Amino acid sequence: MLNIIWPVFIIISFVYAIFTGRVNEINNGIFESASDAVELSITFLGTMCLWNGIMEIVKRTTLMEKLSKFLKPVMNFLFPDLKNNPKANSEISMNVIANILGLGNAATPLGLKAMKTMQNVNKQKDTLSNSMAMFIVLNTASLQLIPTNVIAIRTSLNSANPTQIILPVWGATIVAAIVGVIATKILIKKI
Image 1 (cartoon, rainbow, N blue to C red):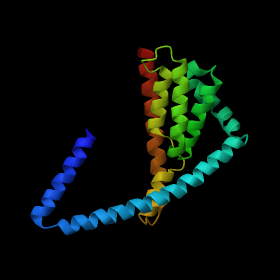
Image 2 (image 1 turned 180 degrees about the vertical axis):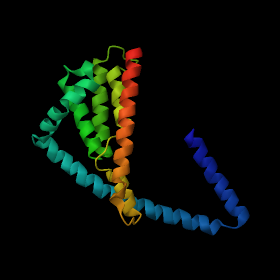
Image 3 (image 1 turned 60 degrees about the vertical axis):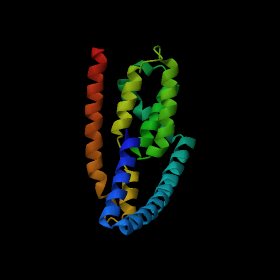
């Protein structure tokens, strides 16, 4: 649907610019936007490299095992049918930890890996398991201690205080996670 809406908006914008004599403004906007996109990409690249490097260090030390062990009671509550699946629990824990650290780009491949592992043990291959549904809810809520992407965007836009967003992000993601988990637990019991 969006692949129809956006081209229509672009065409309408060009036609409007031609009839109102603002073609120059569109050209300037295109080049300024392209420059801003490159700047933002470079900012994201630096942020992603930093945090992915930290995640790689965490993976190669015993810290990941300790964090996974710390999260085990929560994982057992959220994913009771995966208690006896250490591989799935480890992958889910790594994804949750990456999300908590604000590493959405590092969390995505970990999440896909976890979903693949859960699909392998799923008895109904054409239907999401309860654990898969809960995992999607957790990833959508995306609990974050450090919202690196938002901070990077605010930094690239010359925000006076780019980290000012941290407290609202904490509130929003905690509420989203709690509501999502409760709703999912209730719906899982009814199904």
